[in-house]
Structure formats: structure tokens, C-alpha cells
Length: 137
Image (tube, rainbow, N blue to C red):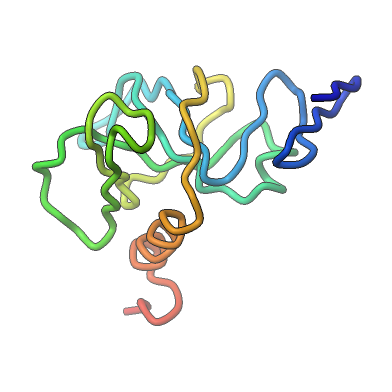
């Protein structure tokens, strides 16, 4: 790796070094407290769903909460993750209906990133959640 004053070069490309480098598809631990009502809270894994331009220049990121409570209702906005494949403590579910914009200061540490096949499932679930494309109703 080559470090310059403002950029870090890795195999995945140039990234901002503003204390944290974030890319779409990365999974981080994040502190989601405080919450209201049925929002997912606590320090938990989250999936970065924001585009990489926003990730590079914005002090905030758009995330989807991840839960290890896999007995929750299976919705078309859920994507299952095997814990051992993605360095998670347990098998988990990405909740694409639980989207939030958070400050990057809430991110506590990178866990891993999702491969292209899994991100395709995430993108389909996002379209369903947001009513985009053929999922507009």
C-alpha cells in the first residue's frame, strides 16, 4: 500500500484516508443508538449501500442494518448471510427495509465486504424496498 497525504492506494483503488475508507458493499460495526420505536439499535454490523462517490466525499453514509435474529419474518427485502462466509459471529440477515443515513463517526470497524453475487441480491432487495424499476407499485 502506498499512502499519500490524502489518498490511500490498495488493490480496490484509491480511497480517501479521512480516518476511514468506506466502499459500497462493505460491512462495518456501527453504533446505531439512539433509536426510536422499531428501529434497529445498538452496536451491530451494517452494510454500506451508498454509492462510492458519496462514500468518498460525504461525512455520512447510507447503511442497511444487519441482524442475527434469522427467525424474523422472511421478507423480499431480506438477504441472508452465512456467518462463516462473511466473518460474522452468526448467520445473519441484511434488512434492506431498515435503511439509515449515519455519520461516519458511528462506524467502529470494518468486518468484510460482500462479493458481486451477494450484492446483486442486495440490489434486488433495495429495488423492492424503495419501489424502483419493475417493483414500483
